[in-house]
Length: 237
Image 1 (cartoon, helix red, strand yellow):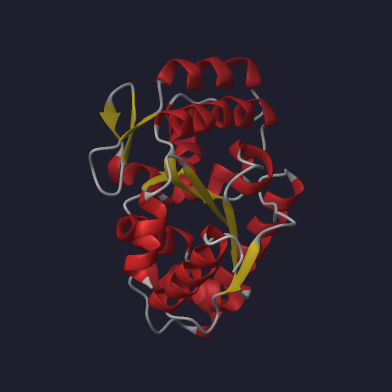
Image 2: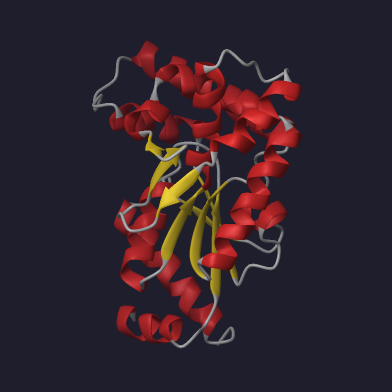
């Protein structure tokens, strides 16, 4: 299967695959692994919103201050270094690295992502990147609905908030969380889901292939995506 799928991908001059879903569902891991296997590049749109949030926080610009926020982001030239794997993100040519993963950025990024004018700017950038890199896997929350509604293949990964809370904590080195910490993390994840849905950042495409990841390993998720993508590229056979 993997070799046959690589051949199907190689035969195409353009391929846009979107991978949407809520936080801590495993999108980033699955997207990066599958893209690497198939020779596709990865557009991690979450990094773009975190970069914009970091930039705004550094400049003391709140999400409600659109008059300052939009020009600030436009002038920042948010970009990826496509030669690195995965691509690293930069602002004004400076790689941001771990700074976009700070607790302050994570806590506020949903509020900035809810600013439609900011979304419009970053969506235009994402579409331009797809024109420049026509074989692309796009990881985000609205990729298959707003950004690339005509994508060749659309995935939507989902899992319970409890499972995602465990994954979020494991990502920070907490493999056996205290029940109270786990519950607080679950509540925060559910709060973020509600905010993302309310501001239009999280949307499930009607024509997406839905994969529930609660009981799947990261490798199992990738294998399921491979099967469904191969079926799609063969014309639904």
